[in-house]
Image (cartoon, rainbow, N blue to C red):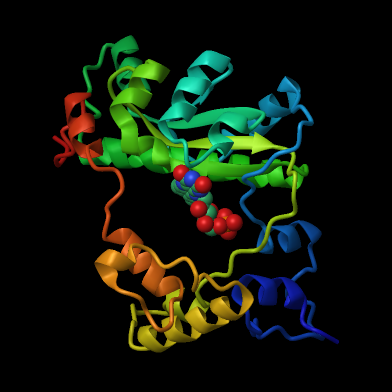
Length: 285
Ligand SMILES: Cc1cc2nc3c(=O)[nH]c(=O)nc-3n(C[C@H](O)[C@H](O)[C@H](O)COP(=O)(O)O)c2cc1C
């Protein structure tokens, strides 16, 4: 008898993942949805097949079924239907043409504003602009986003989150006409996939799961092994990032690529934009 999910785990991690299942005991159910989650992937090319509004509404209902910190329900979503405004957003990011081309474009928003409004409705002046208010709203929006992604993939749609919006936050917020204390966590392109795409290999659980205490002793080796596995499946050796700045690496894997990528920070200007739009990002109180 083989371990359930063997093929999916190999696809996700590029190695045999031992779940430690007692094969006689029926410890883990063999579930087709879970199989799909394990091999889920981002989709950036969409077919012309329209996505009916009813489907989008269903997915949004699933999105807002996500759990929510303190039941504050601090996520919102802007469904950008106006072609002209979508085109203005897309024009800001010409290297991501899927932003303009996807049949549906949603923007998941952290919404620290609504709780203040609810306070006002009940005669309570509350300030939700501290770091806690920002953080809770960001988490709620991220959970709604990922719930939408999984719901969409469950019914055969493909998605691509778009956090690059925050790199041009002032223009994006102006186009979306966002009020203070409401900020984009990520856009979400949605449509029927035009191609199958590929499963993006993840770091091994040994690097990401810590039992009882945080332990990074094996990190360097785990990352080296992961780089090699990933390279064997899908090499990026011919796409070295900024060689004029970092040189040409003899072996160019995921970790070299991500380290170089992170040397040019994303989201420059986001913190100051937040501070100009109602957030102190300080301790509450
Ligand atoms: C919060 C978030 C923001 C993202 N932003 C972008 C983006 O701006 N553009 C893009 O093409 N992909 C974006 N992605 C997709 C990631 O690149 C993708 O999830 C990652 O490469 C792993 O691939 P996979 O989802 O197929 O496993 C984003 C994903 C997340 C979770």
